[in-house]
Length: 450
Image 1 (cartoon, rainbow, N blue to C red):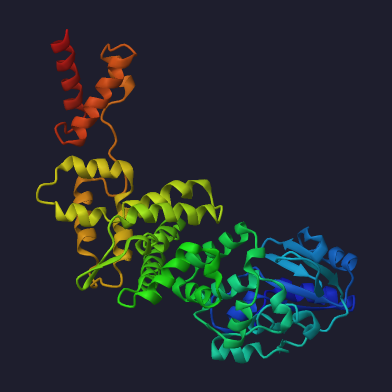
Image 2: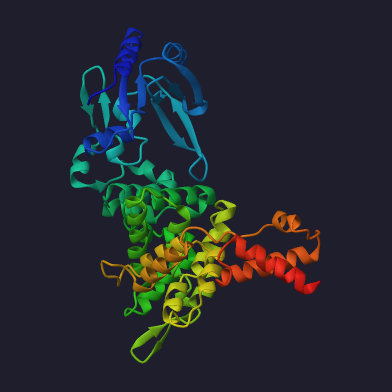
């Protein structure tokens, strides 16, 4: 494993104090998987006391103790930022993922220190002194098998690891071993703070190339008990095998993730909207002849989406944007059906309520299970029409503002507001094409009224 010179120099300093440096964490795993490796490495220093460690680090850059109880320091140098820790053991002392007592011990062996980690693939180290791999739990073998396997019984002490298993499986496109899945199903997930649950779900949705892998792990490990709306969707699938809402949702989520990846976009709003788009269907689904129909499912979906978000406590703006997108997701289909009689003002007004680019993207993803390579036809049509009118990404900007009417001699008051509203309505309908026409209309209206 190629290491920067400052890490080698750091090791030489610790060696003079009887210590040794081991590179640990995700960078080791990613290097062995031939993935891009971050220059910000995690280091574990054996054989030195905290005061010795901190004294050495201060000679290399800015040092900050970020976890006193965990004996973790952050070292910032001109080249990189490193998390540096002493080896430690942990013992369970309370509920949840924070109920641990931590016992730093510089004299632990690497195998003893690695036993606290979650998965075998995260327990691999690179010894800087001997230039060799340390792999007491056969993590490299599990990397080759592309499988997540917990290290030991201590895994069950932290229920947050179930959500991490889902995220890591999706990020790496790994399977989770049957033994680990069985252990995950026995953990009490309701101990977890909802903020941490949301953070893990958020990272799964915006970081994983195929979030469906992690969502399936969540289903298999009973994480969906935390999200009743999705649990209801899975149960509905079991009872009605002809329409599989959960697999369609997984296809939609992966489609949106693929779009975000190809466009350099990781928009959480869109990922949550596509995840929630079918939440209302189990509430209203009914069979007519040989077909299933879901009348007004977007209204129920909006309500279910609000309940889902309230259970997670995300950023406040998501409460408005995500349920609204779920509510209007069928607008491309409706407008396409009415396209021959549709007026120009319809799209202008739609752009005031939502980003048409986001709406068409959502429509494509929601129909991913049935789409051709060209995408969902109504969404393609709406995208093209909105682009022609210049309202694909932004709403129309009013030709006139209050200051323009003041210049025309109109005094502040109700008349000014009424005129602005009327001018903008005419603009949306396409009857006024530019600012000059808008000014002339106002002047003519004033003369007529006087």
